[in-house]
Image 1: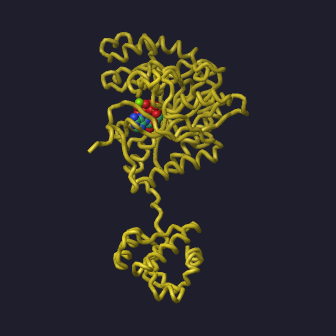
Image 2 (image 1 turned 90 degrees about the horizontal axis):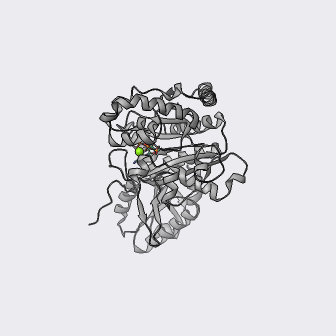
Image 3 (image 1 turned 30 degrees about the vertical axis):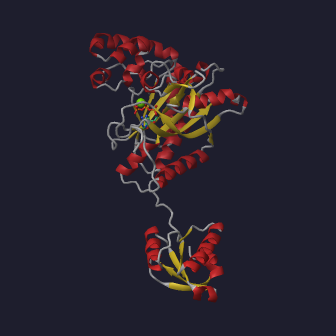
Length: 417
Ligand code: ATP
Ligand code: MG
């Protein structure tokens, strides 16, 4: 027996309706926000993620599924959706379309991590990316979309917001961070020592307990924002307040990817343990230029579908029930099972979810099976029913029966919704 790879999960037929529900909520949110779906390949040139996600990130340093293809090219399974979305935008000349360009995706993502609750090696994200607008209203719109999506799932989360400024304010802030961390450096992890040299901001994102105790006392980026970044952040906060979206400013949020600038945010839950961030996002005004295109502001978020599922299960959020057959058409014997099959087929062509026997079951066993499926009605076709052209349709919930012409079963079901 060959087992499923570590850190991956099957979706079983009894569970797929939960996925579909979350995906439907994602698509409904996307629709009212005018976001159009994009799909990018599961693998890209490794260089895209090196440049797009950033050399100092855990994702690029430790977590990528990188392989050489038979042509000797270095390829990587997508660890996230933004870099691919940006490549799609650039490569297809979307910069010449009317701005902003508003997109969304639902995609698998791959990271070589230590699997635990809410942390997998293959996971799925619903993400949105909006290209071309630097306005704080766009930041607010993206945050509202995330909030509306989470509300439609009925999960409770809190929004944590921060601004990590632009290159100018970050240079000054990084100096302050270096000064603060210098005396503690010998007690911090290797990764943090390397981050200290290359990108001190990243130290705030360290997951090591030994490092976390130092990061909590670090200077806050919000005290170092330049005039423009400060005003932009004020604008975002004002819009959130005016639209009754609750948030707290958390100056420790820097996000795990290098391309972020200004607004960054996370929707967090306390109900799913250590992996509490169900949705993270932010502005990445520098990414397109980093990838060789003309500079263009952009902002987005990605929500982890498995973590949302976990949260919904842990907090007892109701998933809609999977659809049940409206009718089960049973056949009395060998011959009438074929007639039952034909009637079932006809109902299906009219859009009715109908079932019939495929297992040569007795009538009694067919009833039992129909009940297990949760069929709303059952009709038994026997020789008499065939010659009369009429059948007793039994409502399973109360046992009441009605005589219905075989040719009118569809009409009967339509009337009795
Ligand atoms: P974390 O701090 O938990 O590692 P991250 O900053 O690496 O998260 P992002 O790259 O921002 O996460 O991805 C966005 C969302 O995708 C996360 O908020 C989370 O819900 C989900 N996610 C990220 N990594 C995983 C994973 N390995 N397994 C399941 N979901 C994940
Ligand atoms: Mg991570």
